[in-house]
Image (tube, rainbow, N blue to C red):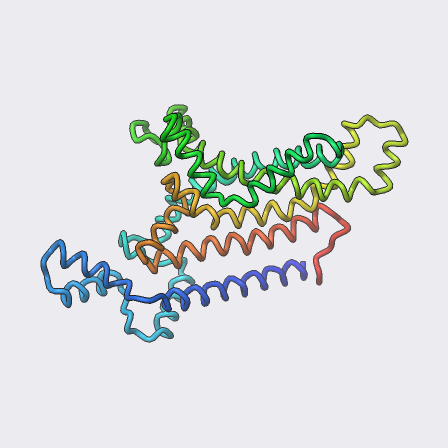
Length: 329
């Protein structure tokens, strides 16, 4: 318990560093974030720029001339109350945006990560057990290709071919506006239909990496004495692969799995932007484009927290799954 407590303290300190770093770096970005909003008010209402600028400052409760120390103190106090900030673009709480966007990202990531992990583990065990077959260079080439190809390129290919060219899938939105949201088959089918291309993109990009990681882990297990003993006892290949190789080789993958899920939350920006899918990534890209300080801070904090606590969960879970691994006291 002491070791777990230390891990939690380290995670919280890391999160505090992220909060501080993000706050000050964002405010060092060139330009005045309120200028654009004031200019739009001038264009639409015809009021003077000075009046529009004062109105924007009041509207967003943000004064760029206020000392950074005071701004940071207000921001931390707001976080301690559970308030992640206010979106300058929409004038609503970032909490509301996250509540609206997070389920869509979690849906896509959980399905795609499960598919890519399962496929990758299967291929990795297969090429580790049956080496020097035609399957090994194929899987290795596929893994090298996906590692060298940015995920948004894959997403663009899928969009152009299957959504625009063949018109087999929609190219925007989370579900058809004609269906009524709720726990009914029409809505669920529409949700899966709209999420199909993002899921395929994430799965295609991730499976090769999992296959290579599983191959490396399985090859190291194959050299263990208990594998040789199992072969000597005449056990069937399927039982050796599943019960001996797979069960032991997959343990190191648990850590990577937890960390990957946290990292994908922040890495979904480009794919969700390509497909106009309204998850965390889409909102993050939009906030960067509009220089929405409030939304940038809130979303970056959520994605960073996901990575930090995914690492923490992986450390704790791995130590429970493998008794040989102990958390450092």
